[in-house]
Image 1 (spheres, rainbow, N blue to C red):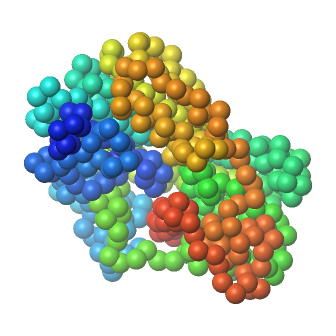
Image 2: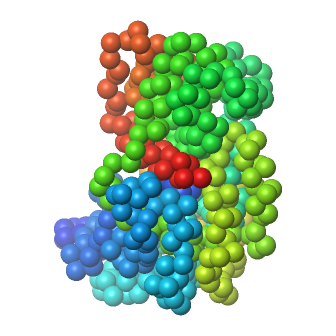
Image 3: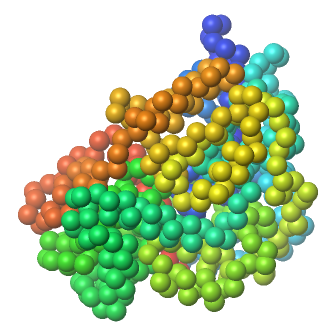
Length: 491
């Protein structure tokens, strides 16, 4: 779940009197490296939290969304002990088994954990912490864009400005696995247009990917299967890789190695399996400990799911043949009918009407289909309401440029400095092209070799040290895969 910043103006007399309220931040699954229902960041107490919105890189304090962290977190005591099936992490199977006790403990109170009530929390916190005459900028990404948009429906005139990114407004997450598989096909199509990538995987890399995974499922490359890696593991790994800029080129490289299955390839997969299949550490990291699968299901199944839901049998058939997926729809289908869902209110599926400045950012290689951000762009056309598509950017909006900056941050800094000033979006023309060679530091971390396509971990003395930028991406992906492994193991 994204965090909500509850900041007071910076202490410098020269600093603008501006308060940041953030409803979204980079996160991991269940369905988003940017934000997801159930996600929590660190707690920010209104009495002491401070931030300067003049430079978002300073890091805005974030308060927890109701139902996460220390804010009345919704959990399951039986399934969240170190001795349980997946340790302190709550798997989907444990969550389903825990549902009777959740109902007994919370009763009707679970109906209060809604998108609208979370948005109302934002508005009321702002009203109580805003400095006299101060500006307030609210920012939400991914699910945070849904949350931030609902806030605008309730408080259209309260903020100075709002930034919504990785736009998921008025979308249905029951199509999530279909979206991810479609993005995988688009990405592999770009591989086919790249000379070096197509040389390895042919003119139709998506077809090669499908044939390779089908053959693997039928018994090809048994050495990799013996490591405990199966199609769902590959599906989840590929899905998570598509969330971020750096790991994406690993996808065609891994397919190439799986198809070839040489001793060097098996050694690389052995190194990778050591990362993917490692048990979650105890105690869990704060990001996992404060995350709430219970809240995730409550929001997702009540308000962000198709009604009627897709038949479970259809989704199982789809997932059996998909190349990229998180298995979200399959897991949710198991508890959909028994979950104490709330009835969405009149705000659900509707649009906010506001005249405040808006910054609307979306990545050209986001898994959320283009129809969703295009609808947002069509609706918000007022003065100083700007939509920007970032070419090649993933869900996290990472958009490195040839000048060494990140385009999304360049634009955000301008917007925060003066929400009513025209934005210079020329950085979109400087976003780097896709490079399918794979960064050596990332390859070394995941495969034990600097060469993701052909290197032999057994022939190299040591792996390269990851750069700070890739180390952060690697940490997020490693934690995400560990969480997914716990869920997959319990299916």
